[in-house]
Length: 501
Image (tube, rainbow, N blue to C red; front, side, top):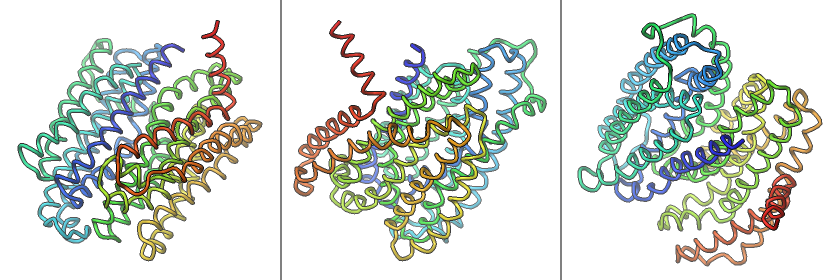
């Protein structure tokens, strides 16, 4: 349990800093590069979200196989052969994808994006560099999955925090003192990615025992993991179509400037994943272990406790973003236009993001039981509603319509998906999950934030006033949410009794 706590803490620090670093520098990017250039950074992030598809889910598969190697299920030769095989497959996929983006860059610059300030040649050149950066980030994912499987989460997150600081902080110096162009921004991202890949690969090879023979491509080793990887690929593919289709379609239907505000709203609400993703990364291996040991009582306790903890941490942030999205953007950026244009989008979009984070632990539970098909089917059905809805609603209602669709579909997904999941896995725990893990903690956060509306600072005048207001309301909302969560409340009271003793 001590190692699990260290891994959770390391994931929060590492993934939290990576997410924050990507957020806190955005106002500087917008100020230096302009809003249209920032849209290209948003497009880079959108394309980067498809990286899990490129590796055919090999990163999570390597995570699993490296963990099995540590448990003695692989020989040094077999794990080296598997790693080399995955490297070759993923290198081929990244080259093909990079070439595809490079070849399409001219068409996208002249015929797809609706640019007003930037020239099509600048957009084309930026997309060409993006192709290189994405190929390098793709390789990073392979070695990250390997390091997680080898229980190197503390090392990786420490290393990642340093390089993410260089990635985002260093580029500010490049833009200020070398070249204030979007091309310079992406060249720096490529430089940092090269060093990241080299260091991570060195660390993985150093941790593995030396094989008797040089590592080689092995179709036999790939065939052993292909079924698991294929099942995950289907889930990830449909899931990414679901989460990225709105951005692809909007980049065509609306001007690039409006698309920037939508991208910014997505980035801000993405802070909620800073809670669910690190928790899931650390808890998932423990769930696999408990399921293998048939320790169902302990599995259920961990499932509810972690679900409640995610809600207690996510719900207050959700309510703050929904009610005070404009104030948060103003406090963060100091930009009145950004605050006014993104606040309505954030208020709607954050509801869907909250629902999406609530599915994190149920999904981990399904994977621990070896069940990948439910989420695949749910996402596929949701996608069938999403695509026509975007083409019907966005031309009339624009970005607000897209945000509303996101919120409605993910709310429906939670209402239906949890029902279907608990028919098969722990059916007696369904209403406990709805009531104790989600509804009651969320209700506490809602009442505090809803009541605070009458005390909020007037307009967007003082960033400091907004900071202290949001801090106080957030703390009170988190406290009431924790008190209404039976598992978390019991932990708090237990710690208090120990302190008194």
